[in-house]
Image (cartoon, rainbow, N blue to C red; front, side, top):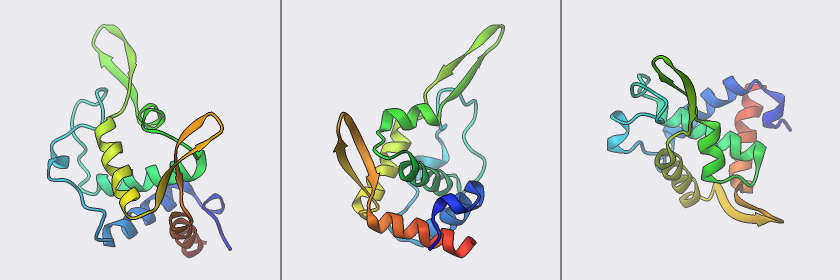
Length: 140
């Protein structure tokens, strides 16, 4: 039995994105072609599959970081904003994109909300874990 830790993360994310495109619940919203992925970006993504790639990356992040909330994911997907002559500053990633992806995963029961001690957030359910480990097994 192979897990996500046994394969290259980039390969896993791209293969997971391909599998997520085949699932009916993972639909890209109509506004997704026009939005930036954060305040630090200058332009929207050019890759037409960016929604599914981000969703695969979020699912892998939840699997590895476990209970994780939107604010921690916003920090993970943030970056430096170029401000001309002024030094660059860190900006958070888009929270709306992450919330919509998490809602799609929750509806299909790939992730669920939980509280572990003082940590509150989302973790991967056994269904989501089986989905990711199955893809990792195909890659290995």
